[in-house]
Image 1: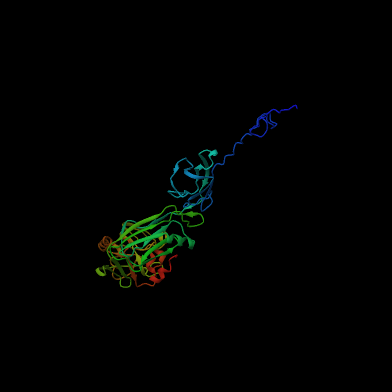
Image 2 (image 1 turned 45 degrees about the vertical axis):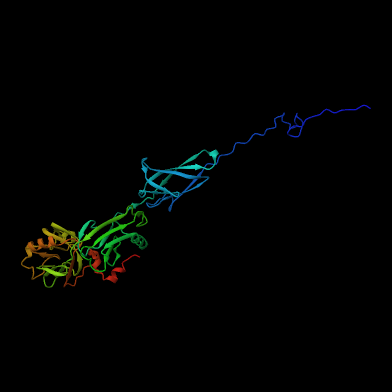
Length: 391
């Protein structure tokens, strides 16, 4: 019997013979493809379009495939714009300038290691085209009389009622000692806070309004906060009796001097107004020019005269001042163009006694002082004043 034997063949790792059977000349490795990197992506939003940022807007960031690491903002001249980054929101330290362009550079950390450690994104942003409405507190840091309200004055009108309401809600006031009072809009450019009655002597008042970024029209914004304070002095009141041609000067409710005066002669434009006014300003010397109140040079009633110890009580030309030329009529007749005239001696004493904000209460004429003619918050009773609030 003849025995046949077969040669032993070893199997490779691929299950074929060591010579292989892959058809690629013996190279069995498949190349690993290079992965496509996925860098972090950034989305920027604000309360308004980022090409029309309003002054109070903050920038909000959303990052895909990564995280926000840092934000830098520069203005059109390359200067740094300071701000604070917190919880993916960047808030400028100062409001955006109107009509301005900015460059934003954001650094993002990448989740995908193949994209590198960080990605840098540069974006142009722009503020809205518009104008500034300047706002200030009048009589800041002054010692004032008991009739002086807080006056927040706007350069341009705040016509929209909802905008006035937002402004009023942003105002804060601290009064010591505490007294009941209310905000009211005397017109569309003046927001006032007055107590129910005149201030208590010695009251301290401080005010702050977080107004930055608030609109006052479709194209005007407030670009700064407002704050200020004043202190109320003694309780001084001037009472003028037009028909009796006299003035009583009171401190703490007691008459300290009675002064003979002359007031406006009878006439639609010359009679001194009745009502509660407030001293607006004081000038040791003042040129009185009738052309500023509608009596032009060349007319029969024109005057241009320098007076002493003038205290303005209306924007329309009423003053209390020295009038030595009318001393013969003081105490007996009304001969002025509407002002209250005193002797030089009495006017000097009164000028030194008084301060801006002292109430001037005139009575005896049928011509009434109107709110817009001066500091007119006391033209209203308490109920009427509260109705002028925007909220």
